[in-house]
Length: 273
Length: 335
Image (cartoon, rainbow over all chains, first blue to last red; front, side, top):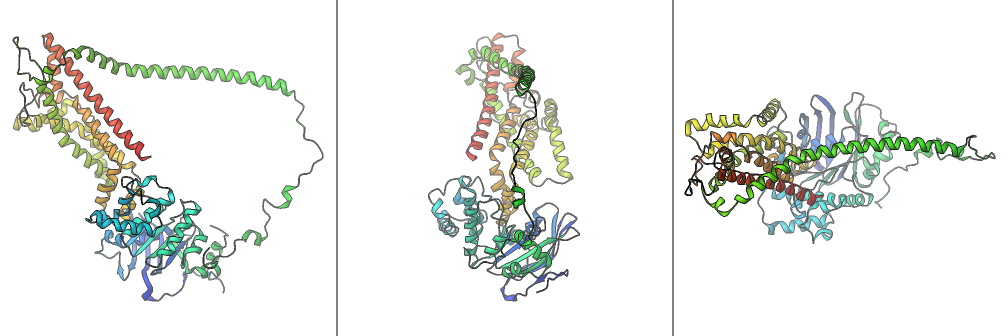
């Protein structure tokens, strides 16, 4: 297939009833500066979508726009439409707090709450948003910790501070905290970049297990990781005017074996980035 | 490990045929000439350099010692006044400390009209400081939280500036403010004294709280927000507890600052020789009493003044120690 060098991003078509998140004409600003220009793509439900690209191209910005965390930064805002199961989360009467209960996030550096025990950390999203008795919370703690393969390691030390865990365990704890509120979507911003290879592999295994029940969008610098976990991959890049944009979006297989855009091909074959 | 290899092979460099650092051509080392040093008397050279070195070294050590001496003497000079005060007050006052001292009010006089104790002034100080805490600590805490979490605009800059200004006002001015605002309409009272002290207390707490809250990493706030927790709750349940020991320390230091104030209480709390628990009435304070007794001709009163001073110094030192211990213990527990 000849390389596509036009400006319009090459992408596949996705049947509408499988779409969980539909991004249309998303522009993200930091103050007056446009950082991400005109991104449009559909995220398929119960699959893993990877956002790849060189540093500074706006992938994390796009990710943070999906759960309205982008506007938490002072002066930052976004325009465009992001539809979660048909509802525009940037609609005029939409509460960002409610959006974030449906779309969870895992960060680059594990961030367990230091003043809470492991038990309280797992159910922090529940305890801080409603009244629950310990009897109601205990089974949730066990179930989520089992799901992230952490139960056996911490079941006897649930009362201890989360700071005593290793980096990989902390990240799995944060993942448990994330899924305890039963979101529909989990966003992951380079979740393994601060972890050693073994911990990374365990997180990747978890991602593949969680795929059945959650829609996962993961930003990663590591192309091999995208290759291992993602069903679909979107390639972002900085344009000449300093804004980031979507270059190509397709199945992971197609992106890595038969990219249609010349820039994608250059990136995945390692000629730059 | 995964189901099927999805990624292109990574032999890009080899495929492009460029030579790299591991290429054969760099590794040819075959020389028949032995390596030799230039013709120099190495031993003599080494001896010269050693002498130079030790000269430089000796000078360096001398300067080091002089500087260390300066620093040590300066530190001693700084500590001496505190130790001197503590010892002086201890020696002068410890003999007058007795049960009577704490359990009698100034109104309980002996045959010569000398008070048997000044327990009421200690109680009065407690009452005044309590009022100051009830007013000053919440103001300090919440304004500190506002400045750290929401304070980005012009208003916040003004608040910060004013807090710094108020932190430096002479304490007698704080007393005048209390006098004008409360004593003139309502009369002398512990509340007037407490509010004057609160004026001196809150800027310390505000600025220290803001500093401590800024130290809490952004990642914790983002983690809370990403769970769908409203902003105010993230602050109340995650950020503030994380900074808790720093905030407690700043509060204890605020209290220590105002406990020793005399001037504002002269014309707000006034004096009152009886036991008094009603804050709307004038009360005696320890600091004012010390001031008055030292100026008094009676030697017994002098002794009681020193005893009172001892109690005050012990309280302030104790408060600082507790603040330090609290801070260090929580810190150690976390790392």
